[in-house]
Amino acid sequence: MTLVATPAVLRPARTATAISIREMSKRFPVRRPLSAALRAPFVRETRLALANIDLDVHEGEFLGLLGPNGAGKTTLFKVLSTLILPDTGRATVLGHDVVRSPVSTRRLLAPVIADERSLHWRLSATENLKLFSALHGVPHPEVDARVRELLVLVGLESTAAQLVGTFSSGMKQRLLIARALLARPRVLLLDEPTRSLDPISARALRAFLRDELVGRQGCTVLLATHSAEEAFGLCDRVAVLDRGRLLATGPVERLAREVGDDRYRAWTRDAQHPAWHALGDRGVVAHLSGAVTEDDWTRIDVDVPGGLDQAAHVLDLLTCAGVRVARFERAPLTLAELLDRIVARRKEESDA
Image (cartoon, rainbow, N blue to C red):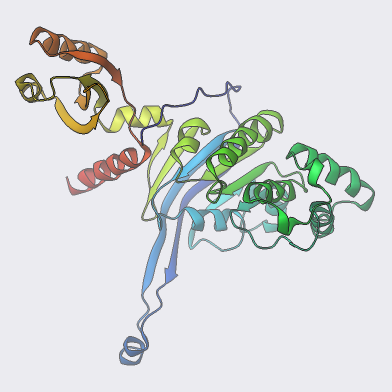
């Protein structure tokens, strides 16, 4: 699946730092089989979860954390949420050290985890928020107004009296966000918020996150995701993690330009023309996708180094050779391709 980036929301320039992470590392003990423990009871094996992470997130920014399972995204969230301690390094949230000032950090930051089971399904949405208001220390005279305000904010005011057990996945996810906003946090950690949602609910939730949380509420959002739509359409920047190491940071479009050739998509009725193979002499690689339309136009993906000038030259060579090309357009890398190329580039650099 190839996605075209959604136009980014224009936001003011950022200077203040909301989250600062410096040289953070974390290891976890590896659970060993009983036989191995009996043979060598004093051996301790560990698994690297985070390795010398350096990262800044600006106030009001929407930053995406990308990476395969086991990359370290959840561990990083748990450290920032003060649930676990780093082995080395430090992290601050709006100037408060997550280790030395955990209470202050929790007042400023709230995590939202997909498939969260701490909601009480036999209570209504209003009753859930009132219960958690007490746990968050919301002053009693402000509770009713705050709960109504948040239910309106997340679009659940019409179902406020409905039992949460009857809610759809999207409604539950919105209620989790409302719960996280009870204490008016300035930083939100979202862990795959659309993972269990259908495409329509996921699109609605992404619009809410972009327009309300960041646009109107001014929250700083750190988003762990595997969704290309979220990475391309929501995030100002992304940070790519792999095996606990931070490989790259920056806007998705810039990273795509840095890690590989520009990819173009051509539709032709001459997929077997020798001109396609001749492009290889110029460093251009053509991939026959096999996609064929009803009127026999075949799609070919073409990796073209050298930017737009070289792409124009390639198109000129094809047409001069008699190749019929109906469309020739830039095709952004998929999220999986982007991650694969960043990981491959870092491996090449480390092996060099």
